[in-house]
Length: 130
Image (cartoon, rainbow, N blue to C red; front, side, top):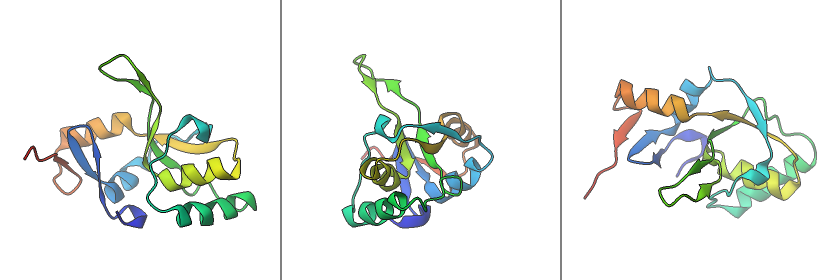
């Protein structure tokens, strides 16, 4: 994992180069949601703590860095799953820690389908089944 989107992230049967998804998502509208709707997957608590301190001070610009998220869904067992952050798990966790009431997101579900259909190997690739 690398910050700034310079990494691949898996969604279902595909991996997406996050920085390219970020660029493609810039055209999408921004929505607001409670960060408590998410169950973020974090790898570095110190990053969460740093972001939370900025948020607690009221200095975080959500318009500059909205979360790229997938909407809530029902799995194959009929269990409701929460929205998930494709990019921004640490920011979501920081917002939860800081008590932020709403965060800005861009819902990327349809965009991911478009990227799969386009088949640009610099942006999307099937997950290896080895």
